[in-house]
Structure formats: structure tokens, C-alpha cells
Amino acid sequence: MAACCTIITPPDPSLLAAKKKGMIAVPDDDFEPIFDGVLLGRFRLTLWRFLEDPQSSIPAAVFALLSVMFVFASVIGKFITFQSRLILGSMPEFQEDSSMADAYHNMHNRKTYPGDGPAAHKFAAAMENPLYPNFVYRATDNPMAFLVMLEYICIAWFTFEYAVRLVVYPKRWEFVRKTLNLIDLLTILPFYMELCLPLAGIHSGKLKDLTGAMLVIRVLRVLRMARVFKLARYSTSLQTFGHTLRSSITELSMLSMFLLTGIVFFSTIMYYLERDEPNTDFYSIPAGCWWVTMATVGYGDAKPVTTAGKLVATTTSICGIIVLAFPISMIVEKFASAQQKAIEDTQLAQAQMSAAANNALLRRFPTRRRARAKRPSDARHDSLLSTVA
Image (cartoon, rainbow, N blue to C red; front, side, top):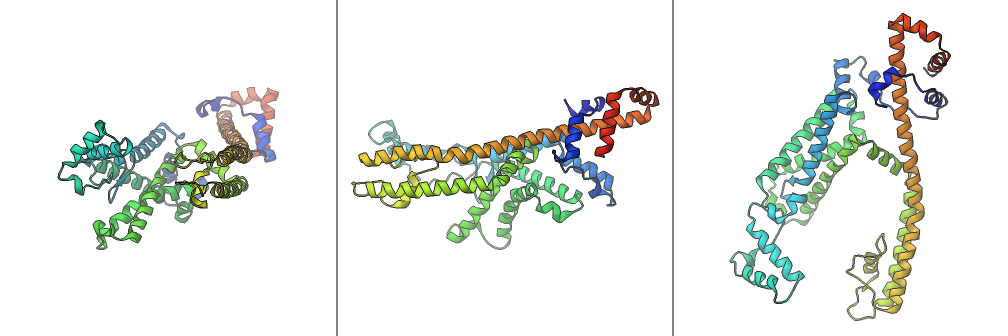
């Protein structure tokens, strides 16, 4: 039942009794004490609920939907300062000089399909281009203008959203330390850090010659992927998944230990079985570790050639399924429990809202109060409400 319809229904006594016994935890969504006594407290509380709770009103739902659209737009067509973007930005067709895209594709086809076919002829034709000998393809050397503008618009929205939340919330340090707010900060911070480098006299072109500096820039670019996790603010399922991961540290540690043990064990065996073969792919134990992935099937770039190696590969696949099965089943069980608890918390919140609305109506309309007093079931509801309160 929708939350707006629960005001005309009596509260569920089983949920109220569960709250009394402590079987159901109530979500910590009551921010009224935090805003009491602060400047413009009532207005700031209303604005905070508008920003944080999409179910509080229709405008809040529209605002949340708009934020989600900005997240998707920034990920799909993201432009990063110093020429590095995602998805659309990684495609040669979305460069300002799209003629280089043909040269890149011809070069790729030549490497993929060698011979005298159409790809080889296209490659030979591309080689006649005077620009081609000096051509080194980088997917984001010259981005299209609309991708640049899209990134600036998204960053402006994310900055506005974070700044308003920071100003509205009374306890600033507590706000900054929350997980979702840290994700929001990581979404916008790298952009401004990169913008500050030219102000400090550091040119982006010179940074390409410094390996250490480029490593820092790449880390900043990777941090921008944090904007994907902004979706968790508007998804109960993603939040439940995060709680499940935090409560499954033991199971995840056990899974990591099992995987590491299996990877080292089987890669060592494969190394000693395959190392004497000509042109072997298992020239070292770390190379064997690359072959033994989580799914224990490798990527196809390394494969055993001896009979013993193939038998070990078969055993590796079977053991990998067994190793993954037990910890994952426990994690799935915890996720199901957390999801059920989230549903019960939502039902409890609806029951509390229903109880508060019914009590307000009973105080305002005496005839309804006298009529309800004659019904034993409603009297029992009132008793439960008084004990819970």
C-alpha cells in the first residue's frame, strides 16, 4: 500500500509489537532534533527532506529523477580535463577530426585480419596518407565540443547539489563523513583539482612527459568513476547491497583467501607442466596466475598444450566452481535477509504514519473518537500505540 493511503487504515499491530520487542529496527530518518534551534530550522528541514527523500513529495521525486539522469549522462558521454572520457569519448567517431578514425580502424583490421583481403588494401591506402606515419591514436586527443559542454553541465549540477546539502545540514563535519556524501565529493573533487594545475603553472602537455605526474592524473580520472555510485542515494536496493557487503566481511575474506590459494596452487602446477614446451604461454608462475582467473577459465590468450596441462585445467575449472559456491551462497542469504529487513522497516514507517494520522483525526472529530471507542480491535491498536510510544 502506498504511504499516502495508509492514513485511512489502522496500524498493523504485529509491526508495532515487533518494534516494542526490538525485532525491527526503525530507520534513522527523523532529522527534526538536528534542525531544532538552528537558524531557519523549519525551512532547512523541509529543504533537506526535499533533497534526501524522493518519496516526501512529487517535486522531490522529480529532483531525484533529474539527478539520476545527470549521473547517466556524465558516465555515457563524460569528458575529463586532459582529454580522457568514458564510453562515447573512447570512440574514434566522436573526435573532432573523425578522419583519423578510419586510419585507426584500418590499422586494427590489418592486425586482426592479416593477408591480402580488403582490410590489407585499406591499410595500404591509409599508409599513403602523409599524416599517417606520425599518427599515434589516442581515443581522446580531440573531443567533440558537445561532450565537453555536457561534462561541464554535469559537474555544475553535482557541485550545486553537494553545496546545497552542505549548507542546509547543521552538522557539517558529520555530513562530510557520511559514505554517500564522500562519494558525491569524489565525484566533483578531481575535476577542480585538475583545473587548479594550470593555475599553478603546470601545463597538461608537459605532464605527459612525467611518468609520476601522469600516474597522479590517471588516479584522479579513475576517482571520477565514483559518480556511478551516486545512484545508491536513490536506490534502496543498492543501499541494501552496500549494507550486505559491510556485514559480509568475514565471508568475503574467506572467499579471497580460497581464491588466492587456488590461484597460486594451480598456476604453479601449470608452470612446471608447461614451461618446457616451445612458445609456451606459461613462462612464469605470475603468467599462470593471469590464466587462473576468478572463473578459472582464463581469457583465451594462454592455453595448455600438454595432456597433463589440460587435465589440470579441467580440475581447475571444477575446483573454481566449488570454491565460489559456498561463500557466495552465504552472501546471498545475507542480502535476502537485509532486503526483507528493509521491507519491514518501510512497512513500520507506514504504520507509524498511519497511527499518527488516525490519532490526529480522532482528536479533531469527537464523534469518530466515540465511535472508535466502541470497537475492541481499535482499542487494542491504541493500547499498542501507547506502549510503543
